[in-house]
Image (tube, rainbow, N blue to C red):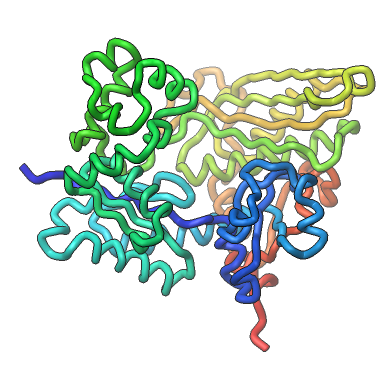
Length: 425
């Protein structure tokens, strides 16, 4: 029986690295990327980490560093990050027999049998150099017989520079040595609460967990923890998922850059979120029947000045659809039922659910047929909006959108917008 071999490829400081790609002048500059509305730090370059800037720190706490020019702060540029991620994943698919895209900056590779042709560490270095040369992103590679061990190997590749960005953990002795050095909290799937419970049982390192009895761990915790124990011992319990599972729901939501007190502005926001959600729905090649709309004020505001209010409402279409027009029309009607004047709203959103893959039972008493040439129209809209040459939208989404989230330090969308293409001088 052939032993399974996995590799985890993880982009280093991904968001910050994307910001530096088209800015050679930032090579040694500390860079941080901020969350929605430029609130908190969600990504840091290695130089920013060296300054002691912590993940999640509010931007105002490092404002002095930003104002003095010691740190460059960037608003989250989701279009840029998504496109660079797609390029990384496409490159990996050319290098490995099978790829599972795990997140925007991580992917598992199936390297089973590759060691018969090439040394695994050498292969990992080839992956690193290819992505660096073709795309300009630095990655680390962890190789092991299970996904859980590959995660630990990748952690070691990032932490210890002498490894050269690649750690091969297919050797049993190397596995146990590394696990003895790492706290149990570093194991994939072991969160803070579970770590505290394990520590009470005297399980403090990853090796302690590996040496625990799977049956006992299943009895004390769950089958998930017992499988983690098996994976730490080199027994693969998780296969590569080459095809991403179909979503069961799609949520589109954002906090506002400014509080909304006008119903028209809220209608614009809800229409915008419906448009985004429907675009994702069509990308999944699904249709949906259920729509939920929700809104709330800030739970952190002074309750006397800004009383708290939150509400949500759901309903269904008679016929499942992926047409933005159908859901905008429905969303506006739902908003009318939960809107209350006199509040300062901080966030709203929509959720699509009850998906169908195109096959569904229609209603015998359906009042009207689906929108005329719905699929053709939505296809044209998606194609235009994805071309980078312009954008079309529905009037209900508004034009100015003063309520939209603040991104005052947004970098150009170098790879997805024609007007943002860098100019050679």
